[in-house]
Amino acid sequence: MIKESDSTPKVSEASGGYLIGLAQGQPSPEEQLAFLAKLQRIFEEGEFTATYKFALLVALTELAVERGGDDNRALPLQIRWIAEKFAELYWPQTIEYSTGAVGSTPALLAQNLGATARLVSVLTNLRRSSGASTIAAAKRSGQWDAALREIAHTVRAQPLKYLQNVGGTTVPFLYQFAEEPGWIELRPGVASNLRKFQGCTSPRCTVTSSPRAASST
Figure (cartoon, helix red, strand yellow):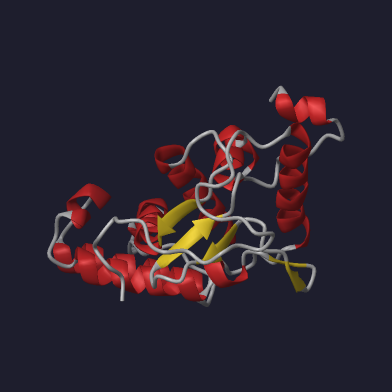
């Protein structure tokens, strides 16, 4: 169950002995470079077909910008907030398109099978049942909360579970699930790195071998 409260949950101790608020300062150039190298591994070795992994990176980055800081602290995030970012990202895919040919019927763009199709289906049903033409109008509708719960469930079961699987192993360098249901915790320094390297949450990002380059980005 996703709670409406924005209060910070109790989060278990992370690997390496980190706790919320104990790690201060900014990530070092070496730590920044190691973060970018791991992020690049996700793009090179992670499985992105028919998943929301790229959208999850975008959502986490936007939340780090909005709610995080440029220090080494961990950042608790409600999965509901992540789900809302997904709704905003995928809402344009609920628009029906037409080829313009005589006799053609407007239709949704074809989706991959699996989780992607599920999320777009939830948003399409929301659009039709609420009559909303924009995501802002959809958020004001009576159907919004139920749709967001469905999206949050899918986000937790799919991309949050699998994003950090790289090369057949789990590399949990971005976040961990919190003890409080409905929350995750970005690990110490991750929010700062996501804020600093916003442009690198895409496969086009490449990592240099110089720590000085990371510190000057």
